[in-house]
Length: 479
Image (cartoon, rainbow, N blue to C red):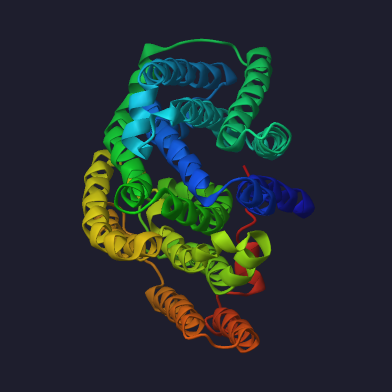
């Protein structure tokens, strides 16, 4: 039984890790076939697709996931899935039609070159079709079908890479090859999922179920709108105030640092169902059980972020040519930023049905991000965007945490958490300082190993790492 539980957890964690690692592993090929400037265009196309598909989904993933457990039979669960999917698919293709009509204008406005219109259209459809897959994955996760969750997630990543690299290497299609590869891969996986679900679940549509989802999801739409602006607008600012090459370096750094975020998402797929269960069972965290439960996932996230931040230089040098090495500091700084996002991933406001507040918080976050980033990007380009994003994330996370605590208080173990946060920030900034001072690489490498070891010892000192705590993340009845 225990081995089965561990296996299920591995299945739920594996897709996020693979999704993060495969794009990084393929960088040695992509970075030598695509210039930094073209890589910047690719980043802008994906950013545009992410923005528009986020609007098309209208926050329905959150409403669907929350309301799923209210459906007690497979018939009701199937009707909920197809109801939500039908609406979102229709909106996705409607926005895609308008994107096709306005493609040259969109490309000129975002990248300064109308010739990239075709690229922006494929960027949108690649991301939007992939977003539809999320509803099926939520279904797999909620019913405990870890194996299907893993394989349908991994299949798309692998198909995207194989098709994209084939088009880039053998047909020399550059940016368009990557985007078309993602579009074809997402479409194939979506077709397989539809075929499987139409055979196993009764198709249906319910206005009442849709209304119930809208009650949760619609207040999140402004958050999605502003949230995507907040996460992607920095690339547009770099393009506007800097250069496409700066966008390329920043995107490379962001892609590698995003491993930390995917790493946290993989952990969240394991612990979030239990957090929800504890919320519904207890009603509050007066005994601090949720706070204690979340300390280990935070520590593991921070450990991953610190490791990537310290060894970004070695990763970039091994994976990319010299023209991409300007992304080293960007990886280090953004790794810290993604660690801060851990607190925003907790479902306090969703549980409390205060999703409209998230839109206000996201709008405030965007305002802070723009105000901080504009002067820093003007002065330092991609590096400035990284430091600006870190600073704005620190401020926004503090505000979001304060508001979330008002509606559902989690009794965090702040002594342990703040000590860990302080350590990773000090260690990372010290590493950047030593690198900028030109200290001999071998000395710096030994110092980095020492600092990572110190952080691991902190986990034992604070008793975050111990067998009893680790075993608590394997529920007695996993799903």
